[in-house]
Length: 487
Ligand code: AMP
Ligand code: ZN
Image (tube, rainbow, N blue to C red; front, side, top):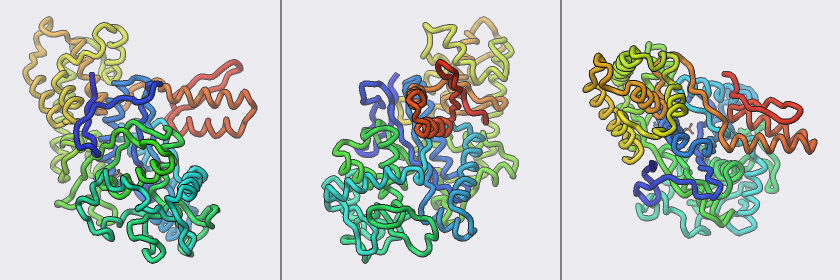
């Protein structure tokens, strides 16, 4: 079954497919900036991306490599650390841990790799170095390095910024680029390396251009290259990242590597409050904790965030959480009705589709009762509201008091699989058991080889990478096994 999604560059719906012969689907999602709790607007984007990840897992089992970065150095993270007189790493660890806890509560799967900007300074410097050598970048008088936008003919294709004739000054205002325009040759140029300023305190790294830190955009180019290679299958983020962040990523990566950067770009729309984007800077935000303090469940938030089309703006209202709680309760009631016929227990419901698929391989992949919902999601650009409408319509027409009429087991499996795809956990807190993907196994193999070659530092680094991706590697004399990190 194909998986079709809107593609931002061509502005058409396109099928998602791995482009490389190894069949691995390479997926990069821009992650959070870790200096404060992520708000529910951020989580709209991460929950939508989590559904994409789950659909990819279903479509290309064991062949998906999902990378999501952590921006742990920029103006905001440094300012927070300086204001609180704490080491930067302490501050970003605190908010990374909180981000993970919120993601777990919202039932978002961990990416396979979650690289940090500070953990990839060398990779960023290496890319900037190539851009300098190729003439795509220059060093300004203060020691900052800028990308020369005029050196890349295709600049602006994704956002059509030239066609829209956006004012350069406003178009280039973005999250971490408080640059001094006087230092740049052209106002459209953007920072690859930012020279150390007094305000940065001890937060700087050595580079061939002097002490400083990477600009924000280069981190995603460098980390996706390191963990996914030069060309990726899908690159996603919230709509605000389309310009300039993703435009700049394309410019840096394509000029450096000389190859296509991403086959497919996807952007989800914003969560609004009173018609304005929910954002830390406007202060009009809710966090997950704000909502649980009001008595709402994280699953209700997840449901409410998914109940609108991902590419349409969603005006957030507390009432939508009441509606989401009722919808979830209705689903629970219906599923309990099914479970009376004995297919599985409430605790077994989340994993039932996996069990059923193993015992009925011939009908694996058939969506039965959830067919229309599945088509709306996969063939109609993630049309989750339409899917939920179909689902309730079909379920309302079922008479569960009449056994023998329906294939209860297969219908329970259909519902369980649809809930997995949407990440809606109806009962208990048991996450769905997943086995390590091909990418994780490849990483584990690499670590095993490094250990055999007595490269202990390399092996250690790989163990950390596996742990960040959610896997513990247990060594034996003759080999290893993998188990999910216990949360
Ligand atoms: P940040 O932590 O600011 O780097 O943002 C993390 C993600 O949240 C990015 O993909 C943003 O595009 C997305 N985002 C930020 N604000 C909103 C919002 N109000 N609604 C939806 N997504 C958002
Ligand atoms: Zn990014």
